[in-house]
Amino acid sequence: MANSTLLFALAATVLALAAFSAQAHKPHKHHKQPPSSPAGAALPPEPYPGFYADAERCLSKLTEECGPEIFRGIFRDHDAISNKCCVELVALGRRCHRKILKATLTLPEVPKREKKEILRRDAKVWSQCVLVSDDLKHGHHLSPSL
Image 1 (cartoon, rainbow, N blue to C red):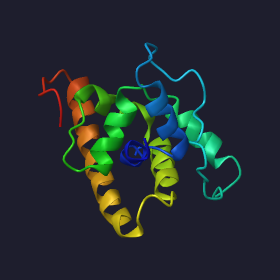
Image 2 (image 1 turned 45 degrees about the vertical axis):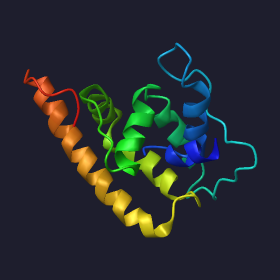
Image 3 (image 1 turned 180 degrees about the vertical axis):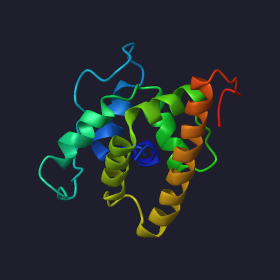
Image 4 (image 1 turned 120 degrees about the vertical axis):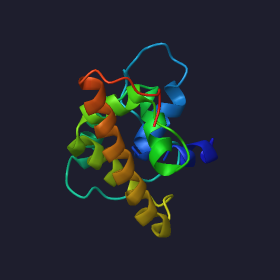
């Protein structure tokens, strides 16, 4: 479980990761309960009061399908993001997306040496998803994923 939590540590905080892994097989589309941190996990101090609550609100807007998929696309460079999840990411908004990413990067499980590479991949994913979203809005047909 710890390894899968680390694999799912974007678009997400420890709070989000616990929700994704615990509720991955439930039939509802969005998270009904706020995520909770795994036993024994300590979150770093908030950059400002309410930061984690804001990140949770942002995470609650992602479906259980797309949250982990977006995360893998950013944190594991070779994983593709479907057009559907790209549209969901862009609809989430850059501000919410950056908040989730910032919360994730503050986790001690994310090595400092990898943060620069993660930020590079994040910028690439965001740009590609904006293009996909714009193309789909204008009726262009695309392959199913990036």
